Length: 193
Image 1 (cartoon, rainbow, N blue to C red):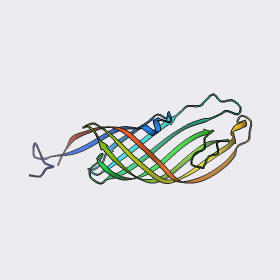
Image 2: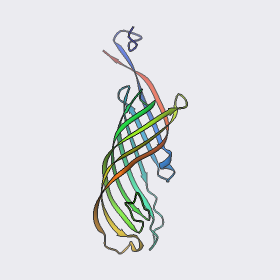
Image 3: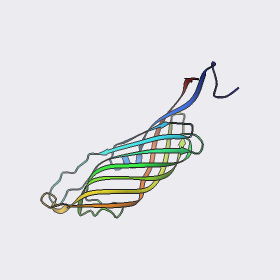
Image 4: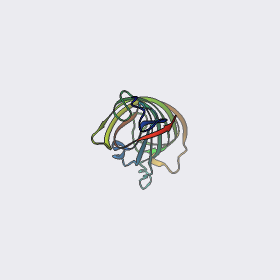
């Protein structure tokens, strides 16, 4: 008997999954984030991660550190065994809007300036998912890619009155790093033939 067929003629049952997750590394930066993964086929899933950091320190002349941003990363994953289990490779997109000052990131940003603008890009990644119960697990992954940033750059030491400089920069390097706590919800669905 075909393992996909059960309980009655004309019904096909297949396993689908839905997973909610949060990136613990990103949360450590006080950036709230949430991911949703939906199984498309037994080996392909769509993962969408969003984050928003609204925290802005009390701005005053000479002290305007901030890491304000939102970020969305949609991703298609191919699982070498089955979705949400074991090794996977993926292709992801990146969209972000940001207002960052007082931080040096990836040798791209000078902490003496404020950067406010948009970014968009693509990348590839590799990861692994471990289940430690029927519903809970951990996944880790790393991605590299290219992001085009468009921004206004202002001297952070005198941020209220300076003229900004408009610039663009292309970044190539790490675009994803995650250790995510996941809650998996798998269920059987049926479709009439």
